[in-house]
Amino acid sequence: LALALMGGAGAFAPALAVDDLRIIAPAAPGGGWDQTARALEAAINANSLAKTVTVENVPGAGGTVGLAQLVDKEKGNGNVLMVNGLVMVGAILTNQSPATLEQVTPIARLTGEYEVIVVPADSELKSLADLVAKLKADTGSVSWGGGSAGGTDHILAGLIAKAAGADLTKLNYVPFSGGGEALAAIMGGHVTVGVSGYSEWAGQIQSGELRALAISAPERVAGIEIPTLKEQGVGVDLANWRAVVAPPGLDDAAKADLLKLVDAAVNSEAWKKTLEEKKWTNLYLAGQEFTDLVALETSRTTDILKTVGLAQ
Image 1: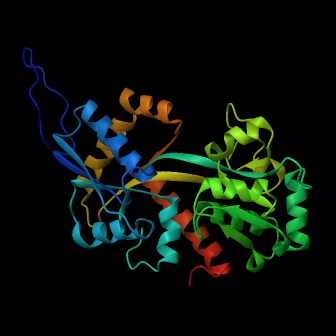
Image 2 (image 1 turned 90 degrees about the vertical axis):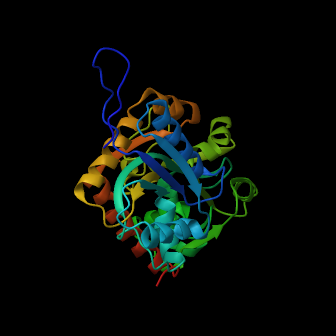
Image 3 (image 1 turned 135 degrees about the horizontal axis):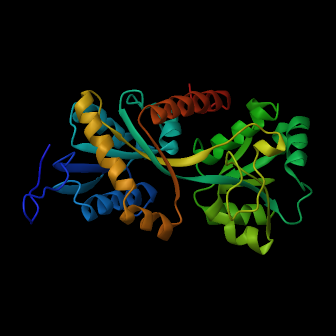
């Protein structure tokens, strides 16, 4: 630990948890993981929580290229964090990655976004109950439009179908490369239902072009008048979360130092301002609780993606 002397008679700054920190963003610049890494870098710098902070982009294969680097080259290194999220859980399975999240040291979930299930305004499906009934009657007749195969949207579609008692092996999921393509398909009636993060289609929901059947939050979200899946009898909640993890092989002291650093950063005014500006939802969850969450998400994602044939 480094101790910095402040100006004034015998006053000291708090001990730095980490001297020189490197944050790996396992994606290209500009995306969500990169933005998260740079926002964390800014909060650390604003509060002088480390001597130096750098962000390193290691894109490829849904983040699993960066994950492999963390596992293979950074073992025991307490000066490294890597941003990741739920998308990586699916990418590990679909890319058959030899590096897994079981090998890393979980630190904390930072932010997340809940997903919405939408249909066009003129859809015959007026409620989540209508969707559940259609899924039960003929699972394949419901086409789901969302993001990449194996991603958060796909996982949620599978979880809903499973909870509804539908035939998960017949899940009809249509992946799109971007929200614009998915929106066009939904509005044009080319898919039955759409699934994505709330912010993606908030404008169309508010204008009435899309009808939101449910949101995947565990309870009602302030300012969003959409009923949850759970309150409508479908026992599923899911957040597309972003988090930070550390390399494998850390001793207890190194892990505690990183937890201390991240905790100080996310409780700072700089971080809170970023959340407000970017409309990110604070889902901070640290230590063992986050470790348990990763295990749960890995288990249920593995179950869904194996059943729909995307994982072995």
